[in-house]
Amino acid sequence: MTIKLIRMSSGEDVIATVIDEVDDAIKLKNAICVVPAANNQLGFAPWSPVLDPDEEYVEVFKNFIVYVSKPAPQVLEQYNNIFSRVIVPEKKIIV
Image (tube, rainbow, N blue to C red):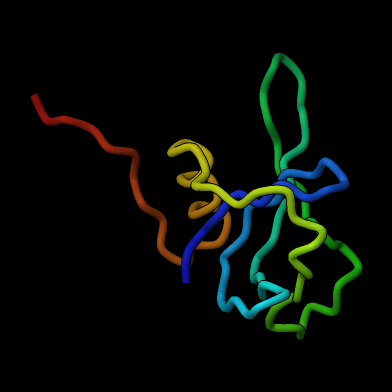
């Protein structure tokens, strides 16, 4: 499973864990969308807030995807903080 940035043809930037990929679709878990916030910051919101919480994944057809890429490191860190059960401290160098 890999965490990816997925640009949808609707213009949404979705960060999600890709759990499987077939010829015409990909299966996503823990999908959130990037939303602009105040002071040139970014926020995150559930990509599909009305999705049944018992669903393990959502299947997205590839014809609705513009591109798939690796998210920026700080976005990846924030995503992991949202969905991780273990809290990882920020990297600090001991002096």
